[in-house]
Amino acid sequence: MPTLAGARQSTQARHPGSEWKTRLVGVPGRMLTHGLLSMWCLISMLGLLWVVASSLKTNQELFRIDRLWRLPAVPQWQNYVRAWTRSRMGNYFFNSVVVTAVSVLGADIVGAMAAYILARFRFKGNSAVLTAFILGSAVPLQLIVVPLYVLYHRIGLLDTIPGLVFALVATSLPFTVFVLTGFFKTLPTELEEAAVLDGASEWQVFWRVMLPLAAPGMITVTIFNSLRFWNEYLLPMMLINSTERMTMPVGLFNLMQQSEQVGDQTGLLAGFVIVLVPTLVIFFILQGRITKGMTAGALKG
Image (cartoon, rainbow, N blue to C red; front, top):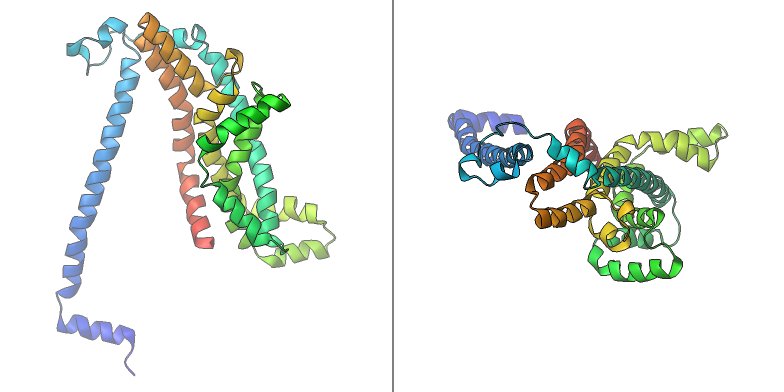
């Protein structure tokens, strides 16, 4: 009986140029894809470099047409000092660090526990609960902001850091549970059974065996949740009223209003760079882990 390899060799023997034709057809497609991606990357990098360069100019230099695309004559580092101190970006930065760190920790712990139960235990309503989590990601955040504001006003959590953290953790659970459930479902049951035979409780099995094995998924959700919490604008704007508790995105909006009143556009650009830098640092350092984590989840799912 002829094999697939033999059939392929006979086809290539009859049509010796077919393989090269296939390769040549794929080359223009790859060149076009790479060209478009390179152009998009170049445009993004030019925009970012223009913002950074403009944040180091004077306000007079910023609005000169002949200096629009040039580097600053003398870097004005005091723009960053002014944005950090006078515009209270330092206070906003500290609030964002606290809110992001606590929210990520809470989302990881609660999401991992829920995902572990849904993935490793079979009970009545298991699929319904998992479906409810998945459908939760389809609910627009704007739809729950007003009811959440009324609820927080009644229970006394309005304009508090813990209230903001609770809201961020709750809205991140659909994504966190969905990703981690896929990882927990594929973990080998032999390790779990071996730990139980050694006398480990369910709590110890989760913390000491299963959770470390799901590290790629934990890293993935941690990175995505960190970026989302750091750049979240709607929830802090609606739930935080006092200036001393505002986070960076809301503080940047206030800085924009102040800059329009006093004409300090370079201070606004400096504040924008301050908000942007942590996000870029996290992405460039952990982009490899993001790719590996999402690829592993896709393969395991």
